Image 1 (cartoon, rainbow, N blue to C red):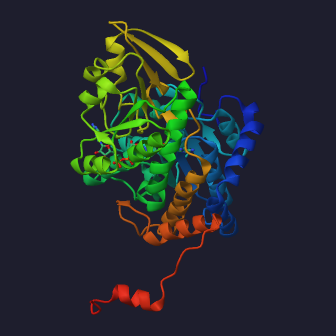
Image 2 (spheres, rainbow, N blue to C red; image 1 turned 90 degrees about the horizontal axis):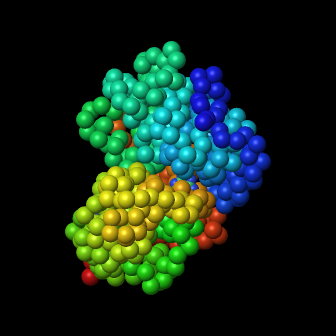
Image 3 (cartoon, rainbow, N blue to C red; image 1 turned 90 degrees about the vertical axis):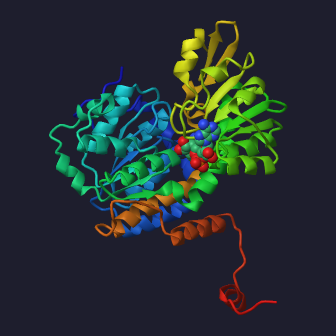
Length: 443
Ligand code: NAD
Ligand code: ADE
């Protein structure tokens, strides 16, 4: 068993994987032109000199390119995984070789996961970067003296850590919808300890990463795990937010009959007018071949639904946490469970029916595949790098609130991406600009 000890500079599965990881990172970097440009500028200006950054994010080749950009800007980096199963071990090894204090490997236990977060906190960071808010929420729980199983593990790694060291944190960033929701709840309760930039809420993030990124990588994960044909299958997509609509669109592109399950009447109508069938989970449960959750909510598929499903139904989750498909319910109604393929578990119910759960109900795109393609992460992580720069530039000026990045930064990222694609767009003429700003001109 891998153990993190207080004296560790890093802890990964196998340091000898570093050369393979390095090649993977180079591959990603070649497909991330916007982040490359930003890294070049950061290297010149060194705005992060003397800054310690704690990153609790999926340890992938794309995250490594982001870490490289921050290192170029002069930062020291401590990194842990934002999911116990999403780490690419070769990349983690390469990061350690690059001088990142990385504590991550695929298949971490809850204890190891939170001890790794504890190591990040004990480094006394100036900036936190999160994907799902586990690092930030652990910091807040420790500050407010809330001790549960998770914070106890983290606390074991805190040496002579003083709660006052939280005062040095100038701000944090958050990558995903679920993390932003958790941090906004802290803000609403008046308990947020430092400013947060909700990177997820940038247009160049959620319109592309959540929609097109998940659209492709979720199906990629399901296909790599099962190798089943999507054409002609009834694919049930739960949640028609940014992630759900991307998945629905791409599943249709593969020839699936897509059914949408929603709780929001407006999104349900949108799904209908986009050409999908919409129904309740109970109705969909009877006819679905593949179920994909993308809601950020808990128990979306539960006992009452499993009992109605067809023999052989496949279950996958694209939402942040493993709570959308109720695994405890599935365990309760099953008489046996076995692994039938990498990342696929077969559950046999009392009546002999078999249901197949992918990736233990965790993010299927990162566990069964490699996450979003680098081209998409290019924009998400350009936002992350610029968010850290924004926090540094505005040190001491921001309130303890959850902020969006200014629209100008979003627009800059979009323009850089278009340029990298060799696409020119129209410019408003002086007359057009005046016309759009005038109230006098009519019929
Ligand atoms: P969103 O808020 O845009 O959409 C969520 C949708 O789910 C909403 O339309 C909501 O009405 C619906 N919903 C909530 N409860 C439901 C229920 N019980 N049944 C059916 N529908 C329900 O959020 P999003 O940006 O689409 O993100 C969804 C989840 O995916 C979040 O957990 C987010 O963090 C995660 N995410 C994952 C990845 C990834 O790489 N896998 C990437 C981005 C976001
Ligand atoms: N989230 C979704 N895809 C990702 C990737 N490739 N790297 C890091 N985080 C991700």
